[in-house]
Length: 202
Image 1 (cartoon, rainbow, N blue to C red):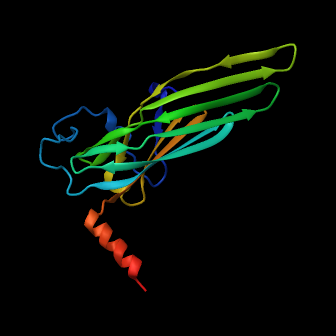
Image 2: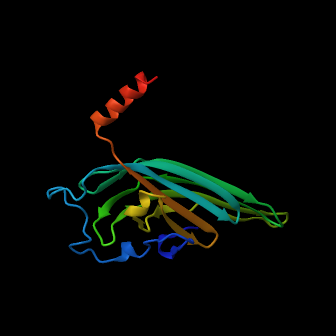
Image 3: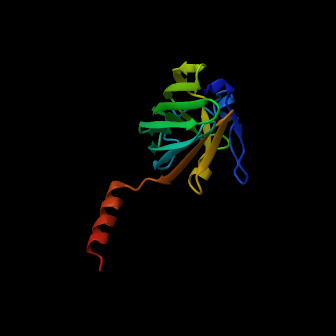
């Protein structure tokens, strides 16, 4: 069963992860953007937040993707998503694990250094764990844990605009890989004009 305090982060080859950043004390250069002040970014950004949840015992893989918007004031809004997962492992006793994540992440742009996007996962989860052995033993586990997951993630702002910034969280049999991708938002008039040109292009 997942627990945010037991999560540890790993560093995939070729990627620089900012795993310790959520633990930094909030100071003047690392504080969330204040909408009453001048904008902290010269443009807004659009993108996605993708999560891939894999488990080795029992084996399963599930994923979800959410839309992301970063305002010029550094406020990060993420669309909500629901992810169902589950698997069964046969053996001397049969182990089944099923569950649901309701995701409602949110976050902030941090000026750094280095520049990064801090995201709170804000997950509400519920699971069912069942282990059944042959007679005369029968059911030896039938549990339904639930709760919240919010370990805190930090994505490199520049990596998010190139190959996508990745943070991977590992806990026992569970591996959770988060990917944030961002591109600058197009002004409405530019997007409209592009659409018109594309419509009438030969």
